Length: 424
Image (cartoon, rainbow, N blue to C red; front, side, top):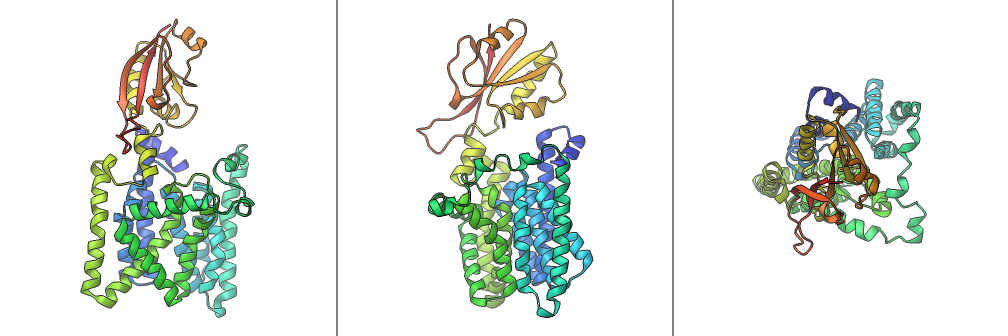
């Protein structure tokens, strides 16, 4: 959020400002991917990892979104790379860099805590000769990271970080009470999300690579795998709403395993291995084409498609309504009432109209109360509501309808953002 606040000072479009931060976060992940592959394995692994980070639909999609998850993934990847470097050559300089990366991750989003939880497992890769030195270096890193995080305690809103935990997670005791719910549903979605966002051929090669790790019993590879599993397993058991962006950061170590598996395949089977790798990228490149030029037609997981393109959460029409209001505000004070208290309505409109003193934004329910009609007697009042949540109120004049993407379920019908003028 702080990085985006700087970006907002440079670019006029707030959506672009948020997205460009994710683009740079994605570039940071690309650099971390190459260095991790090169330093911990081979240059060839680093190149393949960088190619995958660049072309996998999973990373491409979120590296273009105004969401925090791309930056969290970048910090998680850098933390893993620096921690593995410490396990090989413990240095205070590297420990400080790791501490900054750990702190950056948890400042970006609270699931960054999983990097701290995963940190002790780096000791699996450490020789007994360096064990004490590595432990001290990792401890220093954790201390620096937690020190950075605890700077947030200066804020009077610090407790808000955990205020809504119950909205997203079941308590740990829930595992004993009902271990299969939400585990079964979340596992099904995990498989769907990875098989679609990685594409099926690459997903199958990933599964092959995981099996190969257990066969080889390499401590470095097992540790990297743990960095992926440690966040994912609690999510499967406890997350009330499981969505692909929540697992983006924990998928990064999995892509390392995938890169190592492809490198092994190429080294063992030469031309055949290269052809398999090349062919496996074709579905990903087709997916990428749709993401870049026609995202509504991209073969996304069902829930992601609904959330980003079809349902009330999709932002179609937000910018257009804001521009309409700015034109009206040139003539005098206007009021926009939105159905919804947070999110795309009213916050989506607010970010585009910020600083315009002639535009006032209120939020309400689907039913328009009498006091809002009273406002329409003294100034122009408009009402923004999603078609799927619209309740027929009197004295409404439809100004414009902004359709969202067509849903795959034809029975459900196509949602839209509606703009009405409220007459007294």
